[in-house]
Structures are given as structure tokens and as C-alpha cells.
Image (cartoon, rainbow, N blue to C red; front, side):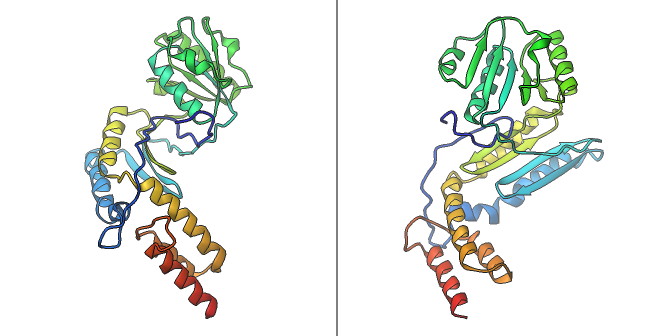
Length: 285
């Protein structure tokens, strides 16, 4: 993934599988289309089975234009957001492997990162060649947390440092995540399955990152690799439809129908010809 692209950041685990060209099946539906008809219910059933014995908890499926966010919460409702971090300033405290993972994802989202730690892994050095990352080789000080930062992350194995970071961030009303310490977090970093512009975020509110990872692996297994290119073609054709047809039931039915069809970038694509014929008949009518 190139740095500085500025993709929305869903605050944790990104997996970017290699893209493959979507191919139409003899049945007129690509693997991406067949997935929604066959596997979606299986994944929902998996979640229902896992949580059926935990009556005091609740699972929310939040559907959006770019994906589904799954949030497990108890008592307090957690509102899931996708953040644009391009050119936002982020403070990371810690110079180990976990900090390295977080910094890579922040840089991929376009953030400008300051990392503070007395001992910093050599793997940070190539990343610091970019103007997006500044390395500060010293111990953390409370004054390091200030209003220039949009969010702060604690990734050390030193509890007093983590607590001090949290306290200063809370004073200033900053977003703060202390790794493996839910009590010192006001946001949590979900596991994320990604296929192009589709992102599926899975959060357990810090209750069980291991289960979030397990559910992510389950979704990864069944989610077609060609969903990214398929979704790109869906978006392009959707914009054509929106520009040609007025809002109403006819347009909604056409868009819903296209979401179940195989798409490709060729002019002779059956789904594209189908949409164009519908748009032409609407104009004539």
C-alpha cells in the first residue's frame, strides 16, 4: 500500500489481498454477486451462535455504503466511525513491534505521525524518510500531548507511561487508544477485512480481540477476492444511472438489480447493456 494516499482509516487491522479480475459465470453472476446470496447468512449465523449464550451483550450490524461494521458492546453503546486521517497529526508513544504496525497503517491513511520512544526499532528508519513520520528518541513526557494532535496511541509495556498518556489526552479531549488496556481508551481499533473500497470492521470493544480476529478470518475465507474491482464497476455504473434517471422506485429497482449482477469494464458487458436499455426506455417513456 502506498503511503500518503489518504484512504479512510478504520483504526486497525487492514488486509489488502491481491486484486483479481472479475469474471462472469455461466449463470450471469460473478463470485462477488453469488457471495451475497449464499455466504452472508452463514456469517450472520456464526455471530448469532457465538453470542447466543451471552444474553447481557448485544451484536449490532451497521450497514453503510462502503461496508458493514460489527460492534459487540455491553452497557455502553459504541458508535463506529470511519476517519479521514490525511494530513491529521497523530502521536504514537512506543517504538516496538505493535507501534510499528500502527504507524504503518496510519501512514497508509495519510496521517502525519510523531513517534516518541527511548528505543526505536530499526524498521522505523525507512518509514521516517517520508515527511509523514518524525522520530523522537527519548522518553515520553506529559507535555508531549498537546492540542496539535488529532489522536494519540500508547503502545508501550510501561503502565505509568500509558496512564500518563491517557490522562493528558482526556484533559484535552483527544481520541486515545492504549493498546491492550480498554479502560484507557475512548476508541477501539477493529479488525478489518478489505476488498478495494469495501471495508468490513469487526470490534469487540476490547473484550476479545482474539474473537474479532477469528471472525475476520471466517469472513476472509468466504469473501470473494474480486469484490474490489466488482465494486468499482458498480460505482461507475451507479453514477451513470443516477445521472440518467430521476429519483424514484424505477431507479431504486434498477440499482438493486445491478447489485446482484456480474460487471466488467467492457462496453459489451451484459449488465451495462441491461442498464443502458432500461435508462433508454425510461427516456422514451
